[in-house]
Each structure stands twice: as structure tokens, then as C-alpha cells.
Length: 244
Image (cartoon, rainbow, N blue to C red; front, top):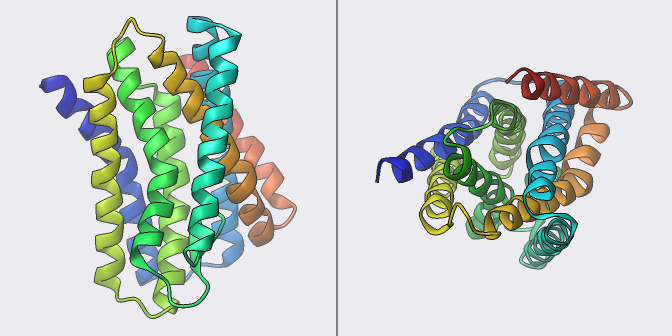
């Protein structure tokens, strides 16, 4: 039971920066270029975490077949989910949701959860396998969530949603993220190939999200400087991974 609660707590803590970012987005104005730079930095950190904490571990534990299958499944799942969101009326640019007409709260929640669940499952599997969360991956999730919460909250408020509604939205996402991590810890078997498959699945989903949403959003807002910020985020996450 203690391990399940720990998995819930770590994932909820990682997702909590969504709420902090949302609060900042509601109470202060920031140049879109700065938000873009934060997105780019977080994307670079996630790229590093995907490569060195997820894909590499899955390959080392179960080999190329499981890695390839997980990457493909994760990418297709994210693609399908994102397509459904578009058809429901919640067009997503970047990691934030931009309502096209009258935004539906469920579509927005699903969009945020689509990003957060793979990250949370990985955190739970890390606790199961190694008894500890990777500092590099945890930092990458924390960094990427801040600009997501900030930009989404600012956009949703411009669409007419009340601040408390927006904050409740992100609290729900935090709770769902914690639950996903706890379920991963409780249901996965430490000796099962499913652990490596989950890692590869999350890597595929996150890579698809980064290329389809987060990187284009960062470049649109920050211009060519987004590339430099992405490299800095990658370098920092890699350094954390190498030193821990």
C-alpha cells in the first residue's frame, strides 16, 4: 500500500506544476515569446528523458522487438486520441487546448490527460523496477508542465472560462495522473516484459506529442530561439541523468 501511495504522490507532485503554471497564467501577463522559450526548454528535457530514461531502458531490458512495438503503439494511440479531440471540437495547438467554437470541458480534460497519463505510468513503473524515480525524467515533466498550465489558463480565460473552473480542471488532471501512476505500480509485475513495453509505449506517445504539438508551438511563439532553448533543456536533463 505504501508503494501505491508513493507512486500516486510522485505523479501528482510532477503534475502539480500544471496548477502552478495555471495560477501564474491567470494572475500575470507574459510575452508569448517567453512562454515559447519555456515550452522549448521543457521539450528538450523531455527529448532527453525519452531517449535515455525510456527507450534505452526498454531496449536494454527486452530488446528491439518490444521497443519497436511499444513505440509504434504509443505513437498510434496518441495520434488517434488527438484526432478524436479535434473532431470533438477541441483543436490543440502545442500542449495547450484552443477551443474552436464552444469548448467542451471534457475535451480539454482529455487533451491534458492524453499528455499526462504516459508520463505518470512511467513514474509508477520506475518506482516498481528501481524503487526510485529518475531525477532527470521527473525534472523534465516538471519543466514541461509549467508552460502548458500557463498558456492553457491564459487562453481558456480569454475564451470566457472562470478562473476557478480552470483551476479545478488542472486539479482533476493532477488526480488522474496520480491514479495512473498508482495503477501502474499496482498492476505491473516487476519481472514482466510489460514494464519495458510500457516504457516504450510512453516514449512513442511522448515523441509524437513533442513533434506534433510542443515543438511547433514553441517555434511559433519564440521563433528561431526555440531551437537553442530546446538544446539547453536537453543538455540539462542529460546532465542530471548522467550525474544520478
